Length: 164
Image (cartoon, rainbow, N blue to C red; front, top):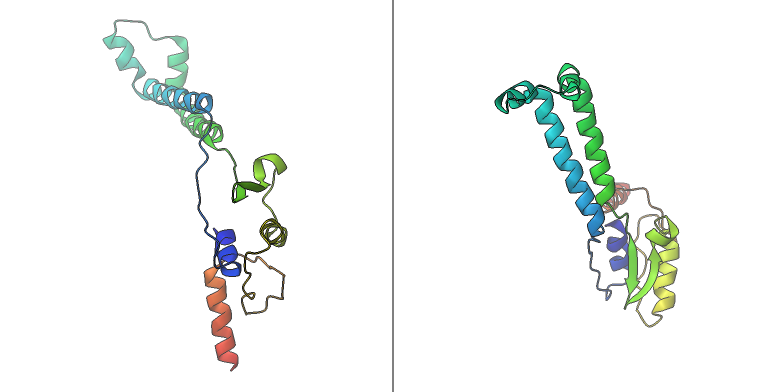
């Protein structure tokens, strides 16, 4: 969200929207199956004897192993969460201006440097009016991302007021 904040600051007329890119249906189905397997494994680990006894079935070896090694079952539950999350995350950070793709994290594998994104926005729409850069130590056309966004600017303003 820092990118949208700084872009909006530099281009006040720019309309910024954020959208979630949904994972493909097969990935979402696989994540759901992993979730069901997690629940089944967890239930068998803790209640396997009672379940198989209620079904009048002998307890299988794998269920005995799961009951004897509950720590492994808990570990597999967490591994299942990681697998499920990785299946549903797209890693998308796509920047469009008027339908024109300016940057794609999916294609490039990384988030753009703010200065290069700023240049791409300006090149794609030269008539877009650019405001002066924010005060507080940032040079013209230079972006220093030290994190913190608004909080960092507030701290810089307070420091300037204290110096005066």
